[in-house]
Image 1 (cartoon, rainbow, N blue to C red):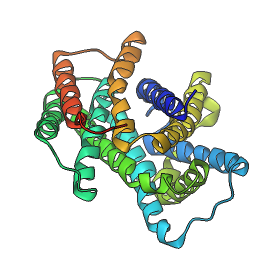
Image 2 (spheres, helix red, strand yellow; image 1 turned 30 degrees about the horizontal axis):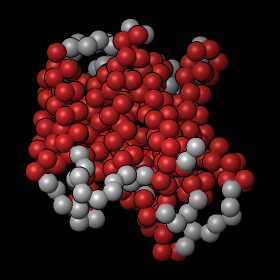
Image 3 (cartoon, rainbow, N blue to C red; image 1 turned 180 degrees about the horizontal axis):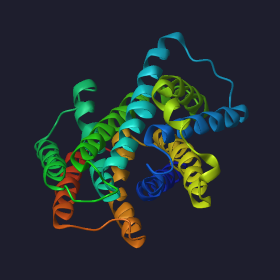
Length: 299
């Protein structure tokens, strides 16, 4: 099996885990674990796992000029991205999060145009506009009366912050991936993020009453740490060694399908006309924004 095929399978695996995570993480918050407390466990657990696995990788030293980019990647991919997603998930619904995360590829296109000087075609421009309309529509008209979703508009806005940070991270981290081994990058990215997140996350993790947690909640926490964090970031960083940032970002299209089917299967969310319309706008917009030119070879 070629490395490219493995990279595609890794990206698919990460997307499936992310899709399931929308419902799994929501089930624990905020009754058992508050969102920022979850980030402490998530980033702290992943930091420990990546430092352990790095013992089996090459011993690399980060060059002085790369620490700035490493810091930016850590803030975008492991701080803003995670904090806004989990807080948004507490305030909104799993289906909303699964839909809005799909604007990440659009963000990749915009950031690539700004910093990598990639041209925005008519298709991409129309796609960005449609994705924006879908996201704004879900924020303004997707509100429902739900006890477990106290502020859906704010939660949906935080999902957009999350998608923006993650899309930017995929672009910025690409140069580091071309230079360092994935284990080296991940151990430092998560270690830096753990320190940055500490003031916000420590108070909430101290509130967790571990003795009263049901068994399934421990399973959910383990899934988020090992699956949603350790494996997904490892899978995506490997995928980026063989594929373009925009190609890896495109796999996020699968998240609404996985997330919605899983949420509906467990009876944790319901489909509405607004959600279907918003998802259609976002998905068509993402397709147009990331559609490749026919000339030349693209990943």
